[in-house]
Length: 145
Image: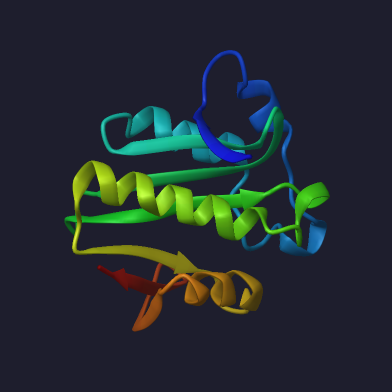
């Protein structure tokens, strides 16, 4: 059963050990950087480890972007050993459900690196659409509820 668990002192080392393939490194921030951001933005960042039963398979961080006043899919990765097994879609759905159930936003935003067609296709499959804005080198996408 795929589920999300908060990142804690008990599982942080395992989160830090997760990684993507070398050809994906330009698309995804290292989890150490993501967790540092979660620490600094503790009131508006919600980092989760993605599990299949007891096996950690990925990391997702949802957030609230105060500068633009909207909720975001901030960080997301599935470990290279567990890609193409359906974990990404389910983890994404769970992360979006967390924000929707807790905060009831009308929309959630994310950014995708240009050329990351796999992530873009995944995001589109759950209802994200391009906004046409490119900011900080990322193509903005939005999912409306």
